Image 1 (cartoon, rainbow, N blue to C red):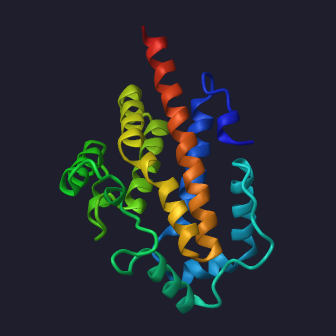
Image 2 (image 1 turned 180 degrees about the vertical axis):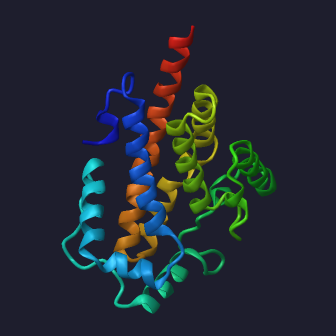
Length: 219
């Protein structure tokens, strides 16, 4: 069952938990490469989880082996796909790269304001730009964790999620997926980017419904 099949007017807790499962999986799979991550990507547990998550979005996982041969090869593939290239890497993981209408400094500053407003300072302290995909994923995860914990007023979190998705996160994954296909990057990364694009698009639509429903119940 995809998260869009939930009754969003009745079960926001289940929706948040479903989003967390998807985004935590993507964050772990797209994170900076390590030997431990490569071992996970090679494992039957990873493939089973990938198939389960992709099934929620009607995406197919091919039967062939997706992981690199070893940890060094995995790291080299990751760097070649996402970190180096002329004039840019084959797939850029920065939201500002896909936003031609606003200055990069303004985009990064707005990301930092979102993070600081909700106490996610580590998203700007990990060495990557604030608008990096991994930081954006971490922020979406953080918002659902706050929502489930009841630590901040619900409507404030809902508005932040809606605005962040609309202004930033939903604007680039589809373009990144297209670039991945055009540049022939490894199949594993294409699948993960396809999953990211589908999840973010669905999240954006559901967040609009979620916020609208919340406002209607309050008025």
